[in-house]
Image 1: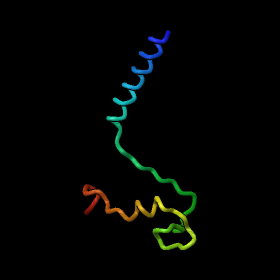
Image 2: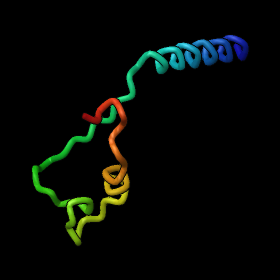
Image 3: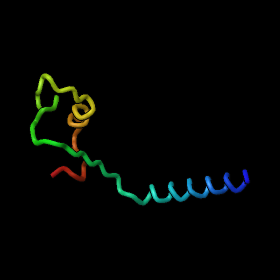
Length: 65
């Protein structure tokens, strides 16, 4: 039983890794309102360090015009 479990775990890990190589790298950010209440827009009350750091980075070369 241990061998079967180990083989099944190995199989599903390999399948998952193979599927991950084929998927595109997509970042989806959903918002619940359209206000600009973020630190990167200058809002002094907003605490959004991750989005602030992300917005400070330049866009990837393929997205620049």
